[in-house]
Image 1: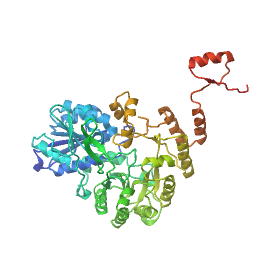
Image 2: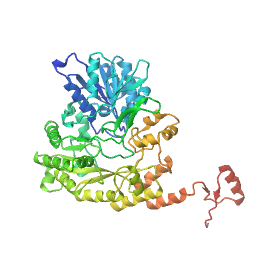
Image 3: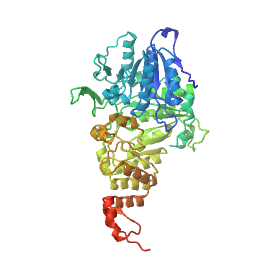
Length: 542
């Protein structure tokens, strides 16, 4: 029998108040646990500040059997069990919710995060065990809901930012909760409630030499939001994009607009946080998990990343290899860091400052090198930007990590070829992701009916099938099937233009059948009739 130790934050003054259990679902089962759930860690810290007893079962870190979660549910009289995460964790969340009500039926089950915000009515229907759902940003909504539960008040009709069940069993959304304006009012995440040794043991990444030699890496979030309107991306209420309005059926539902509310921590807040992490946990690498560092920098009129880099050096966090101008090795001391970038907004002077401060690599959402696709993508970049950004980033000593996607609605052999030629010219090796219409994205709403049809009328089956876009789910390409996209993914990974040419040549004759063996001429009509397709006669010397 497996046993997991739960770490609790409690003081004598908090005895007798609500007992809150947070569940972090398993995500990316094919990989080891790498990322502490930042949102849950923040909510846990806020909940502790409000005087509640808090424990966390990190299923993603422990990777134990379901009987362990059952033991956790039975371990105490939980007043609230809170669970949430991305849509890709839906399958685990559904099973964990059912188990919660079976083992701890008197606990109040609250759900939140991207999986819930993107489709609240559907999730409440699919998982009837959920008592209350929190929409969008939960920093204010969640503690307000806990205060009501403390007072045995379960009427949430006047609580902004939730979805609750009415007496007749139907679900109702309240008006959206405004985002907090100043992120610096947030406490530091409750890192000590997580099994850090598990996450630290998986610190190494292959994105850069500095990332690969990291021994104690941790994630931090410097900002919330993004100014871009990429068709494939979702924000789910964290950027001022979510509104609650009546849909075509007259039911209040979420809608995601182009509204943007860009917010970021001050450089001082972030540097002080990293210094705390170094003092408490000897952290040697920090990953910024922001949607896009460069859009934040542009929003600050190009001051934020300069100030962050300057303070990083002044406060003694600069890695010694960057300070001394020597190659990095395992004797280096200091804190390297990484993040996300934008090809059209990354300037050389900003990158130079970041590199000097210890930035080792940046993930670029390149997506494609085809001009037509980029024009329709809403990303605000061009093929020229995508070329130059890789070269410029390399020049500053920061490794650019390009993300490539195939299977766009407008995807063609020419667009794939344009991307492959660029990858070859730049020396990039990559296995592309598939264009995926995640709930909450513009693509999801544009192709929702097609998605439902592809999953036999079962939308929930699509949600359960979602992963990290490295596998095929719903196809939104107008030209290519799932089978063809799988083949194209391999061709792009191989960077084999000859093979792409051959596939395109054959694709144009896809409704014919080639018989490459000796077949008597009198048999042609018989075979053609059986195959219900014309036969192409191929003459080869023997």
